[in-house]
Amino acid sequence: MNLTFALVGDVHGAMHAMVKELRAREKKIGRTFDFVAQVGDFEPHRHDEDLRSMAAPAKYKEIGDFPDFVKGWGTFPWPVYFIGGNHEPYGWLEQHPHGAELIRHCVYLGRVGKVEIQESLMLAGLSGVFVPELYTTKRPPLESFHSVSNKSFIGYTEDDVDRILEFPRPDILLLHEWPEGLTQDRKYAHRSAGSAQARLIIELLRPRLVACGHMHRGHHDIWTHDDGSTTELVCLAHIRARTEAVAAYQWDGTTMTRLDLL
Ligand SMILES: [Fe+2]
Image (cartoon, rainbow, N blue to C red):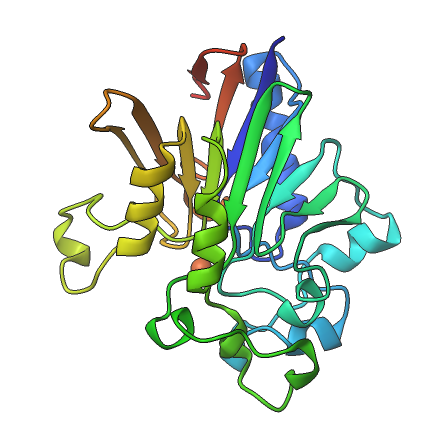
């Protein structure tokens, strides 16, 4: 069993660019992808109403390419699994809290979700970001959209984290935010580049591979856990940044091998 797959950073509605980039990478490695996993801020807005349910300043509210894919003018050549970030049409995604194939080959993993791919690889994901005031409270019901702030829907909750911690060890874990402690980068020293919750989830679940986005820049690290197992961390840039926005791997059932895209 050999699976070849790509991890993709924030897309922010640029689905045509995403497909083009991934096609170019397939040419480079001489193989086609079996699936694609995306780290959130995908922005699949079907129409203005979806867009209105996204938390973002007005100047960032753009409909993006997704309507073309709904109409069939664009297609995803491989299954694309994604989690929610902090900029998403949660008015729509919340109708599928346990995940769904929204359109062909476009699979939302839900607030907390997992999928087994070809009985060989377990992909899991947690949607949203850590927001202290949302973490310990219940998420408002879907009916309250438009009467509460869109921001009320961007956070994961303690319940979500409890649920993901019940999963068996994932081969791949998607998180939107970086875990805390990944970088001492001076540019980001004034603010936390990641969350303690994300770090805890990684330490407890010990996935083979973790992909995250949100910061719109790349980073790569390997963590060794107390039991000697390791987690490879891949932080991905915005799809329009191109170079660090995509990573490709091969999975043979026991080993995850990163493929050179340069
Ligand atoms: Fe984000």
